[in-house]
Amino acid sequence: MSTPLRLARENRGLTIQQVADSVGIDPGNLSRIERGTQVPSKDLAEKLVNFFNGEIDEIQIIYPERFASDDDTDGSQTTDEGDKKARLMFLKLAKPDVFEALEAEDGKAV
Image (tube, rainbow, N blue to C red):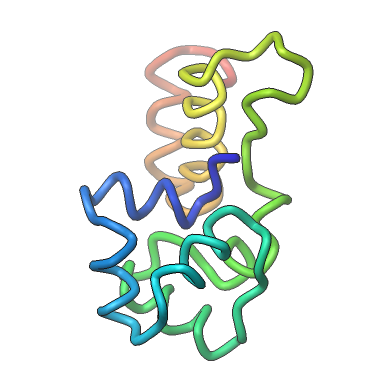
């Protein structure tokens, strides 16, 4: 599952260890939070939002399943297609002005 938190980390070229150290948590916990198998505290979600300078918000961290792409839901979606879908959803939510510019450039809804 590609969650907004994982995408934000990967887009910056950071490791789980680097982010975990920066926000003061165990990397195993961060890994589980990224995968959506562990729910972070509100305080930790806020620390992560601040670390990523608002690229993602608390809702995306606490409820990743609402924003994630599940690359193998029906077997028809490739990893690249799933990642693209997740990135577009993230962009639409986190950076609506950039999303709208891309949408206008394409001349169709993304």
